[in-house]
Structures are given as structure tokens and as C-alpha cells.
Picture 1 (tube, one colour):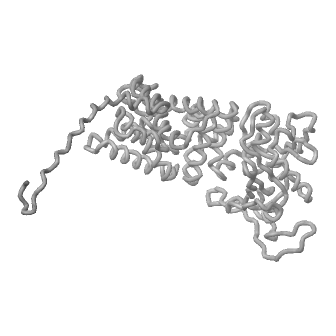
Picture 2 (cartoon, rainbow, N blue to C red):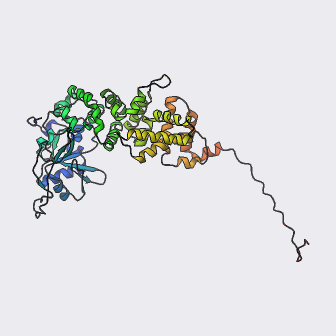
Picture 3 (cartoon, helix red, strand yellow):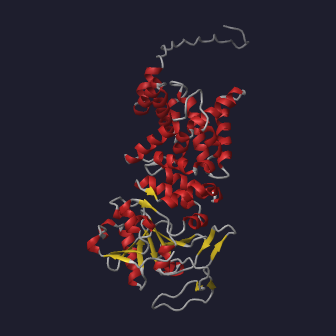
Length: 453
């Protein structure tokens, strides 16, 4: 796709002010500009500011190479092989800085660390920027540097390609993003079939933006997702895990879940779970997932944080409970049944969504904690309540109680115990009768011959 003639929106015609930007992002933009580089704020930060939303992060794009950025900022770490980026670490945030990319097949080699103005020339070792694709067109490496216009064209969606120029505070639009932003449309830049083949994760991102922003996916883009949804399984499983967290922890998880199922993306992501969802249990459709995601959305919208383990435990809880019940029917004790259910679930997900083992262990602890919560007070309730995962286990019980209408007394006891542990312990345990101290009988002494005197 060739870029449109750039549309420049002057400061007087858009709402973005430097006061709305992260102070660290402003410092980075000015330092790059003051050292002779072009530097723009780009992507979701610009999009969200134009929509009156609070940005989650501030990304910067520049014509400075990764080597030049690293030598300009002492707090810089270069990351990534597929896509070389600079992360600038500040006390309370990370500012991501990328070099303008080109979608051209070949690019000139660059000196790995070109000199900045006024500095002596470093060594001449070079590293050629490269664009590397697999046989089916998936991008494996994307490090050919280009111009601002070329960089805009190779981004994913038009609404994510708007640039804020710190030099004159204008908005630069190379691909018609402002028009799509006004219309509330998520549209790929260029041919969606090519863009989704290059990076299948873009299909998930289209769904996420539509759910998060309340936008519609443009017709051609949507039809292509329906057609290509099976290839999402080609993306790296660790990367898909991170994308799943973004999908469901942004406050629009339930809407995202519905769009994933409508688009066909849910089936290749969670094949076993999807098969289970298609079946009814005891004649009732599975509504647990939607209710769980509604609960998570409400908490996030109220400013609370939801841990990854609680997200997975709540979302897949009914499925895992049925698995555990099945293992118990074969003779496994409760704790072992939960362990086996979570292990089987992790194995099912691993080919597509690789959940870290530490998160899997915490999911197991939440479910195993439900058995312990049934014992009031049980042995050492204060020790159990002091464990790191107790609040997540209690949240799970709270949700389960709301869905089933059962265990209300159990939940009330533990909620009160969490507030006043000493009081409830004394109420729950009957007072022990005072012990009577027996007088120790003095043994009669023995004489020198060993006989009693």
C-alpha cells in the first residue's frame, strides 16, 4: 500500500497537549530532537489521546538507529531479534523507542553504532538490517530501516499509525487513520490477507481494539479474519499467552470473548475447551465463562487489578472442576484430583497458549484452596489466611457462591475472619475447661540401706 499524501493536523485542530503526555516521553522526544533526529509519538498513545482515553503506554519512533539510541540514553536496553527495539527504563515506566521501518525486501547495511554529532567515529563493524519471512509469508525478522511514511504503511491498523510531532505539536496522518478514528473503524493498512499472514497475532489485536474501543472491524478485514483464523496457531505460544492477558485484562473481556468466538479465533486457541463449551452439562448451557469475565471486567473498571492466575481460574473454573470431579470418581483424593486436572489443562493449552508453570501452580492453589475453605475453622485458619494466594482463593469462592447461590455461610465466615481473625477463632472453638493441677505426690525417702524409713 502506498501512503496517502500526509495530512497534517496543526495543534489548533486536535486535543493533544504536552501536558497529557508522560513527562519521560516528552524528555525522550526532546533529547532525540535536540540531537538532530526526527522523533514522533506514535501508535496507541496517540490514538487514545485523540479519543480522550488515558494511554496505557507511550511509544516513540525515530530515525535514530538502535545503536545511536543506546549511546544517547544511559538507561537504554536493546531487546528483540525479530524486531530490534530500545527500552528506556525510568523509575516508574518504560518508554519504547523504535527506528522507522521499511517494508522493502532489501535495505542498506548500517554501522552498528554510528557516531553522534561531536563524537569520534566508532569501529566499522556492520550489521545488515534484514527482513526475513517464512515460506508462507510470516515475518520472522523486520529490521530494515526506512522513512516515516514507510514506517506508517507497515503498521497494522490505520488508527494505530498516527504520529504526534514534537517539533511543531502537529498530528501526521499517512494512511487515513483520522477518518477511521472518527468513524469508529478498525481497518488493516493494505491487504488484510497479506498483513495477517505476515503476523497472525494481528487478528487478535483487531478483535481487542474493536472490543476495547467499541469500534467495528471493517468488512474486508473481518471476512479475512473469518477465513484465516486457523493460522493463529502458527504464532509462538508464549506470545499468545501475553496476548490473551491483554485481551481479557483491559476491562472488556466478555465482549472480547464473544468476538473471539464469532471470528473463529477461539477454536484454534482453546480447542479442547471449545469442544467442552459446545456441549451442555446436565442440560444447561455453559454461562460460567461470560459471568466470570463480566466479574473481571467490573473489577478492572473499578481500578482493581486481577492476577493472571485468578483470570485463568475464574474463566476456566467450571471446566477444571469437572475434570477434577472425573479424577475423583476414579479414586483420586481431592488434592490429587485438582493437581491432575490442572496438569491436564496446562498440557492441552501448551501447543497454542503457553501458560508459565508458576502461573499454573497458582491456578492449582486457588482451586485446591476451595476444599480447605469448606472447613470452618479447620486447623490453623490464620496460617491458611496468611498465605499469598488466600485472597484469590476467596475471590473464587465469592464468585462461585454468586453463580450457584450456595455456600453463603461459608463465604460470610471467611470474609469476617479475614477482617477479625481473633474474634472468629474464639467464637468457633468452644472454651476448654480449666485444667485441674494435680498435686505431685512426694515419694517417701529411702534410708541408707535402700529401705523406706
